[in-house]
Length: 535
Image 1: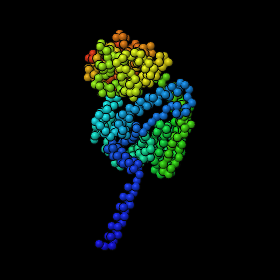
Image 2: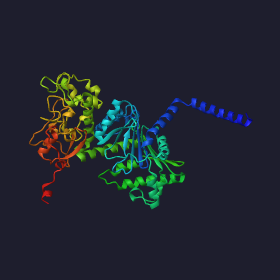
Image 3: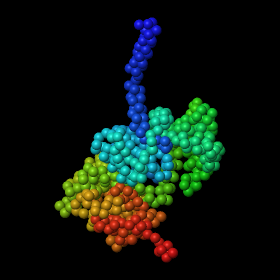
Image 4: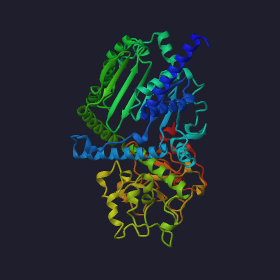
């Protein structure tokens, strides 16, 4: 063997030894992080195509919401109550996300054009068949399709035949860099503009609208190759990292961002958001340049508190303005709990064991949904073989979960009373003396109403087996109608619709009934005014 060859072998052996030493000396956490990153990239690669513009990653098990009192906010009593409600809703949504994730990260990709969403998908790794089925069941509540692809459960739009076009492996380097830039946050939003979008801007030499600061579009085409947004709800921390083409482009972008924010503040109509609130948010980010990157961070407890106070106040004003339409999220959560109960028990609550000899429920369906609304501890306090107003069960009336609390009629209700009721009567989902199965819904779950909100005077104790006993001649007389003349209806398929209060009594009865055999013409749900008909 020649000396040169011996020297080459020795060098190779030395290099191999160094690599092995480095590999075995890496901290387990770093090795695990590297393995996690490679697994994430492998999952995302098939779904990142030429039109992909957004990639989302959420780690539900790492997300925690603080309690309002921990934030040290100087809120009025009214706003304290409002903040507590929002945090309770947020925690409920978080718990549902954790159930869906089943210990895994949730991913989402969105492609252009965003308006019609032809290339959006939500997915996670396979865990168990039961868990995957539960994940796919969410599709019906999102008016989407659930499918398994490569063993992974996915939710995609019903009109989205192609998720992304062809995979674009060359774009994965940008996705990886953006993922790493905010990997220490439990919620990540990656903006990865397709090259053809920026190329169009450059070729046409487009100018930016005055509403976002104006000027040449080069500040974006050169300044934003990608953006990585990291958010930690528990700490109310936000960081945005912009990758620019070079250091000069980064400096220009850093100068443009405050100007753009100021322009946006001036152009937002006051009825949409008060300028005072927007100015608070505009002053939050701290912007700095790090070589060819721009970093904007929100990590100032005093300013965060001021922003949260402004936000809560604004949301309260919008709720008052929008009336009952703000309760859509409550509807969806209750409807989802109904479906999860049905998946578990094969019928809607309450089941036969929770009824008396005449088939009448002892407790309301609202009580039996508690384990599916992250309220298992409260559910365990009830004696299911006793009536709702028994000496033991009646005191629990005071512990009504926030999910059943009206957002529009709070001051008009007695403590423990709810306006979220199911239509009750012959042929309705909850009106019989036996539990209902979805297969009994002859008219179809998309044509049958399962949940409404009634006027305050018709509110009932939330634990009582009482619901909306409507007048067949005037079935909508007791339904809560918003200032816009519309009312919210939760359907048995999990969808929520805003309906016109002027639909006929006949059509309303058909919607409340599950097996009358009457077809629903969607035109009947939006009746034309008589004056318009005359024209």
